[in-house]
Structures are given as C-alpha cells and as structure tokens.
Amino acid sequence: MTPVNRLFSVAPMMEYTDRFCRYFHRLLSKQTLLYTEM
Image 1 (cartoon, one colour):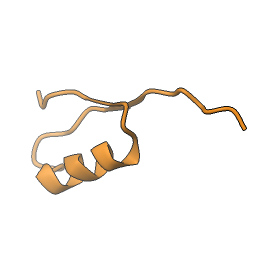
Image 2: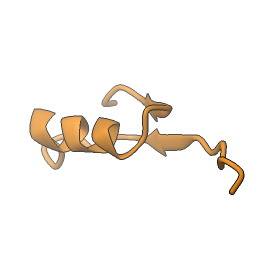
Image 3: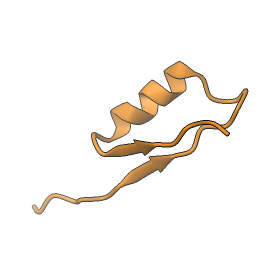
Image 4: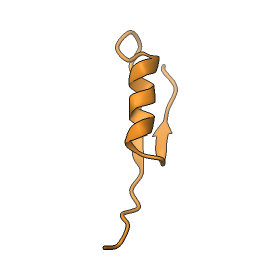
C-alpha cells in the first residue's frame, strides 16, 4: 500500500470549538493545518 499524503485543514469557529476539539483535530492527522479563530 502506498501512503496517502493529504492535508487536513481546520478553521475553528468562535464559541463553537474549544481546545479539546482542536486537540482532537490534531490527533486526526499529523499534518493538520489549524487556522486561528477570527
């Protein structure tokens, strides 16, 4: 099997995502690109 190189991007929403949700998103992929809240 060949490894799949995909980027997982997350844009957290204010008052919806918390630090636990962002930590979970980082666990989904080592290559997670996490944007800051706006």
